Length: 244
Image (cartoon, one colour):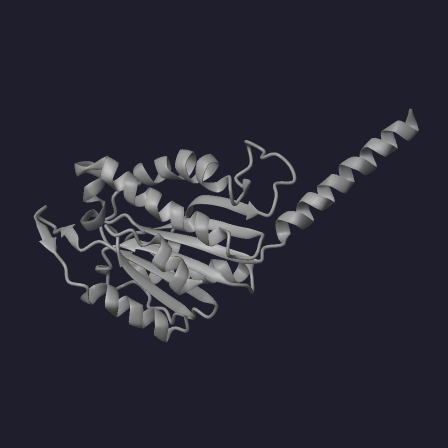
């Protein structure tokens, strides 16, 4: 009886140690930053299916990028809002070479293989979260980028893929802190929208000036490569080629 008990305990400890060791080996990170300001989020109300399509296109690039990054990968989604530097993680998963154990439904930490991440997590779980996001009153892009850098560097010394969905028009309080961005080991995709709503609800067309400004800012902060594309384009193949 005692032998069986001790054997079971040893087996349980072994799998616990393996699981902890396995999940701790983060070799790279993927961060998705999503603009939830009114100027960007209007499409969610006017044409929700089109907004879902834009998110799905982003997910497809993330899925493909995960096949080119060293495993295990930490994936997180953050909101770009009026207080981005204090933003909570709204989607979170691990992308592993192979899933060792099943996911605990009560745990915030879930894991998938690269082939599973789209069908089992991004589409059924993360997409509804994004579509339900509360519209923000302002846009702190710098704070969101800095937060992603701080979190990613705490996770890994390996490569980091950062993807940003925004109109790249920053509108925030002068009271918010300014950050010195440090983006070494970052590969960045800036996917922009140039048709936005102003504060009165009227549609206006922005030039590429805003996203080009952020491309320079991010490059100057040490990013390895920065790719920009209009969200209406089929950008995945070109992004993968230029970034990886």
